[in-house]
Image 1: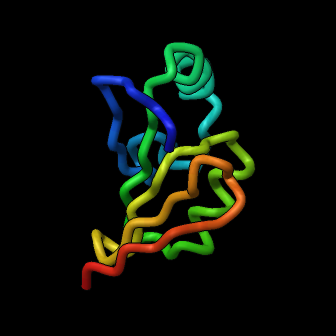
Image 2: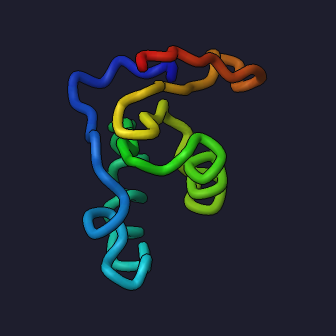
Amino acid sequence: MSNNSKYWIVTDLDGTLMDENYDISPARKTLHSLANLRIPVIPCTSKTASEVRHFRKENGLLDPFIVENGAAVYGYDENDTSEWELILG
């Protein structure tokens, strides 16, 4: 994440960013606005890294993400070419 924003959003996915039907469409306008403001949106979820990679790709999220209830943090270098991993638990 190459961003100097003093703000960032950390959000759960299930029932927060997505509704009870796993629909993210109500949040899309907000996600687009945050991207335009260069405010990072960092998913923090019980999902696996693989699941979150897929979710991020489908929804155009580029910022780091936290998986398996805080067990690891993932992100990409400034050139978006290689993923880094920080295992916490």
